[in-house]
Length: 278
Image (cartoon, rainbow, N blue to C red; front, side, top):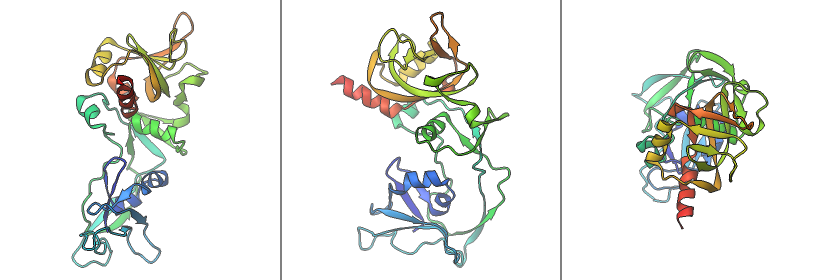
């Protein structure tokens, strides 16, 4: 079959597009694949050496499941269209700014940019792979953070704000191990909130790294999310873009004046809200 769905985020995958994912993303999704009609566990088969196209297969739960017929993506299918595919250069990524705290994003728990494929239906095309010199993938803060948490970064370069090319290791830092004050992407875990400050410490006096939200950003974030003042019962993965400042007592922090410069895991935060209500 040509299409499967992931139970992680209900994304539909076309077999050809799935075959073009980086290997770590394939591994991430493989165990969550299901038949879109009967819900049976699905597996992925890559393009074979004898020319058979990539496809999904499943032991269907319904005898007459509509997806149990053979895949339509065979290269010798009569009357199909030939489509050129440009493979993305997986060694270069371009930074994409997103507002994760809009009402739509928060209500739907969506990852707005991560796995958006143009063709999620049954395929009747044959595919020819073209050179990929000008195809660069857009990555947002959420995707960069998820890859860092999964330790799945390879040797890649990042086009920062679509202009400066910087190696990922020269711009992505753990905020618990800051050795140099420089502009970059800083990631770690948040444990509390107090008066406009998101803190990596769980309790006052909040001596370690913090994120200071500008008044307008603070209002925007908590307009769409319930606010929990004080300590949280779970650590929330987060990433922020900027240059750290040092307070009079030596505390490091980044002030956020642009909502697209910060992301924290909204699903984890929502689970904290749910737990601390009880």
